[in-house]
Length: 544
Image (tube, rainbow, N blue to C red):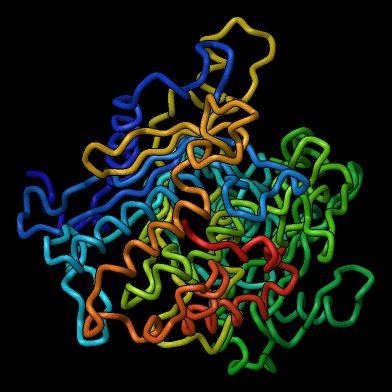
């Protein structure tokens, strides 16, 4: 008899259900905007809703609310100060912005008393809350660009099966590439050593497997680290709030990869504040016998470190990238100002995915409860590091704002238009990314739109400045949706942040009027102080 499932969190098939629903919705869309067969590939993302049910056989329903495809960005010289150009057409960004259109439609229904499938009627403060049992999830057919895409190739292979349908939350901070993966690998290595040598260690000691077959306990290792810094470099021998950096070994050397318990003098208060999961194994691995192609290389990202922040080391192998830093998306010659998808998702996990304008109307921030990744190169630790662990240092958020830690799971179902899938069935020597971005959201009779280079597909050069050239999710169109929604509530229903507002306010002015959101944003930027903030001159436009 199959075990009863009480929610999506307990469903081992959840990731595949979400992926299947998204692919089915994509397949229903018109052919327009999809990659040319056998020549092009694209990326897919979607926002999905789950609705809890009092039914043990079917404990939750799944509905796809928005779909986006794309992998392009425009350079900073092509940015538009009137908000009529879509600057970032990566799939995750397109899907999230299409989701905003859905939220505007549902809020419109709630304020008009027509009934919303997700929102309750406005409360005494003029804001709407989500109905009980409504939750949102982000699906992406690929690992987000930027920090989440940087991880060791050998660890991806070793942990491929472990990460399917699983979500493990740890909140280690200040890690560099390979450290959490090293923790898992060293534990496996230690267990294998214990079995083969039939050795046991005292419960109060930690074993060390070394190339010369010697075992040291934890005290001996700690003394060695503290007394001989030329052998192992460690940030703090008395507190484990920082783990030592994973070094790139030479082919002929053996390098200590260290993850250790705190010494007796450890500042336990500091560790508890950081909420560290401290690993307890230290091991010495002889890297000279490893496969150099996999052991010493990583998956790389095209996203570039922001100019004002730490830069990539650009050394061979695992030292090519610096992890945990902010990045902008690549452009062909003309650099973009769009932050990587890893960075944007991290921002959504603090400020919510609703943005500043919608926060006027919604009681609490809208967070994704899970992130589902399609069948692709993937590492759970890199994802967690990129999308929420970096945010742990953010403090003093307004009421309702949190550091959201979504469950991260992977599906085994591939996307038919992913680069890997197209390559397998194509005779073309070189595939290219599709230049188009498909935009869809779940409103009856809503047209599917396609964007190219930030404009609606098919628009001629002489019509670029006209309303018909805009895609439905550019800033100008979303601002127009906001103004239309603002006109619906009566004065008694009007949110307090929108009372006594001048009709001549700009897009930027209304964003600044969302006081709680702006307070949370300021706290976010105190930690991510090299974030490329869009200049106010690109936001000083009016609706039509």
